[in-house]
Image 1 (cartoon, rainbow, N blue to C red):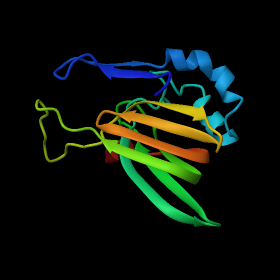
Image 2 (image 1 turned 30 degrees about the vertical axis):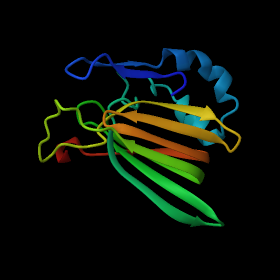
Image 3 (image 1 turned 90 degrees about the vertical axis):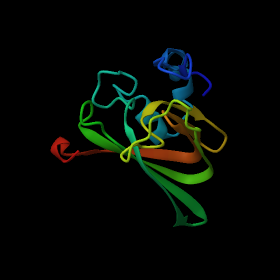
Image 4 (image 1 turned 120 degrees about the vertical axis):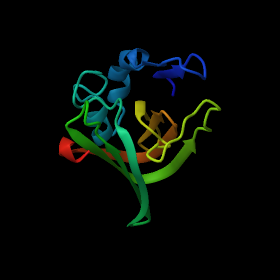
Length: 166
């Protein structure tokens, strides 16, 4: 990521440090160059407010689907589940006219404890959307990897879930 900072001080038990502030300083300038869907999503109140129900931090990776969309276009659907402790909705991102996708899974630390229910991509730490010649790029830093998509635009939809089912 160019502006958003996400890092761990060491491999063991140090907390992950997340800082969207450098990005938020640049966002007014960047937002005017973003396609409409990406702009609406990233400038939504609460997007980077860690106490907000619509904050992306701590959403849980669920599914990444790539499909042919017709008209020689590729579409990607990324589903992020809301944490029952923090969110009231799941988030589905639909990337239209995709030109690039990269998904990297971080190697497990030698200190990692893996249980049957352990998730590999993990939780979203933060994201960053930047304007490109094609439309926009969206980079998502998760506790267990990184997802990068470049597309003409993205559409974000929040869907309510029942916390009792999680």
